[in-house]
Every structure is written in structure tokens, then in C-alpha cells.
Length: 397
Image (cartoon, rainbow, N blue to C red; front, side, top):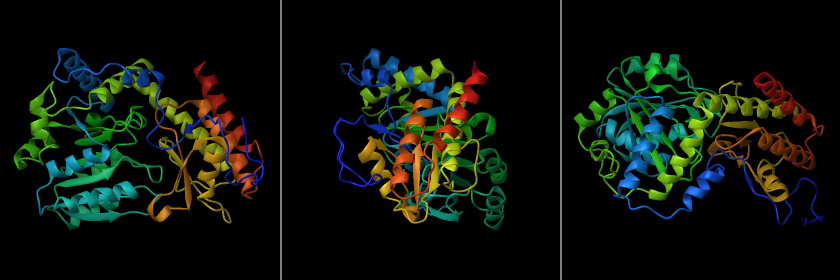
């Protein structure tokens, strides 16, 4: 391995032959089985072989969404699923409520604006969760609202909202949750909790490349959508439902095959075990961050296991932290988005990650912070992460 020696310890340096490691909240690393599935000869999308794959994927997705309702698959990103939900559940000119605590919560309102839907945006400080009591009060002020859009896991801040409490606050209205980063990472039994619609994408907890979007909807939401008429053309729910085991349009065949491989891995591990693994990864990362003298963004939540967001320490260039991690160690972490740009850094751990990934990332982060002038005791973060892992692995033995 060849490394430049002229740059300061914490500054970006040109390093060759590094193993590249993605530690961002999407797109995330791919298991070898998923990579291999993407290299297989392509199937004809109308062939019995692919129809069998499609049906298996939809069935397995129902298990991950924890629903008996419809699961619709689109060739799109997670934002496509969000757009589909707005277009199919709200008429032009209709008022809806958007409860947001970050960049992706705000995206609901932007989509509504483009669809001609009037969104009442209820905003909460980035880094704090949506307050169910405030949602209930907002709905009391506007009793005509029938649909509420919110976020399960706010990727821009690491916050995970309390969906059961929000379900209670929303009452008999349709509740739509963005679980693009949370699905397969944070428990979300949508049928048991009564969440009407959950949208997601392939590139995070489902360990598949970007390009697939999912909408899981219960009977009540499907009936509302059908009553409103077409929700666009490509993203229309009724057209997609009528396709049954055959997508009404040419699907991303290879991505669907890769998703099947990923879902088989989730089934083999066991969904509850997947959630338990992510809880440990989240605990490890949060413990390490605090041991390094860094401040978490917002209150700690034991279920916030998609991404760990921490405030950039005073006197440190926030953008230099991700830059140093990538240049010196080949590890990509994320910076802040929107109003938090340069003020926070984010370590993703959703999907194909285990204890070793956290230990490696924390060890590198200590060195980068030390070089950037943050007073950190080398090894403090590692000891904290190892302590959490040791406790968890010991309990599982």
C-alpha cells in the first residue's frame, strides 16, 4: 500500500490500493450472493422463470413489511414510491398533513406541491422526533384532512419516529410512512400497528442496488386509491395490482433477481434476528461516538439503528471528516444534508453490516479526528464499541 506522507495526519491524502468501504445510509454494501445474482444471464420478463421469481419476491416482501396486504413493486427509487403514494391517495387541491423532522420528511411536502396537493407542513427540529401530541392538535385544527404523511426513519438525522403513537394521534385518517431506510432494519409490523401504507426502496436495509421501489398498502388505502381514480400512469396502483404476477411494464429484471437473493438471506437470518443485529450495531456506534467526546444529534433512541449522526466538534471542518475518512482509509461516511450541511457527520449501518464494520470505522474515525485537532483518546471509541459487542455476543452465546 502506498500512502502520501506530506499531508497532516487528519487531512485528506492520496492513498492508493485501498479497500473501499461504504458506511453511508444508502446505497449500502451488497452481499456476494446479491452481486452474483446480478451477473446471471438475464431472464425474459414474461417467461415462466421470471414470473416465478417475481411471485417469490412479492411474497417475501410481504414478510419483511409484516403485512397481509398488497405489496406493489415499481422500477424506481424510494422517492418513486413516495410520489406514488401521494398521487394515489390525494386528489389535486386536497389538503393533507405532512409531519416532518428532517430532509426526507420535507420531501413529502415537495412531492405534494408537484402533484397539486395542498400540504400542511408540521415541522419539528431536525434531530428531534415528530411529536404525536402536536400532530393530533394540528389535525384538530384542520378536521377535513384525511391523509397524513410522515417518516419512520429520517435518514438525514438518524431519528426514528414512534409510529404506534403517531397511529393513535392520527385517529381514523390514512397514515403513510416512509420506511425507505428503515425497512428491514427497524421493526415495523405494519398490520399490527395499523399503518395503512408503508413505502420503501431496495438500496438500504434490503441490500440490493438502487432502482426498485415498494408500496405496501392495506385494504382501506387500496379502496381509497381506487375511488380517486388513476394515480398517474406508470405509478398507478390499480394498474399495477391488475398485473398480478406480471408487472404491467418491463420490470428491472436483474434487480428483481438480486432482490430475491437478498430476501433469501433475510429469511435465513430471521427477520427478528436482523433487527437484533442492527440494534447492536447502533448501540456500538453511539457508544463509540460518545466515548470520543462527540455529541449525538438529538436524544438517543435504542431503535435508531439505521444511521448514527453526530455533531461536528467546535473548530473542526465538518466536511473534512468524511473527506479524511475516504482519502486515508477508503471508508465513505456521510455529511449533513440541507441545513445540517457541514454541521454533522453520519455513519450508516443498515443492511449488509456486522460488528467488524463498526470497529473498523470507529478506529479510522479516531485517527481522522485526532489529526483534525479534536482531543480524542485513541482507543476510547473502540473500547466502547467492543464493550457493547462483547456483551451482545456473550448474551447470544
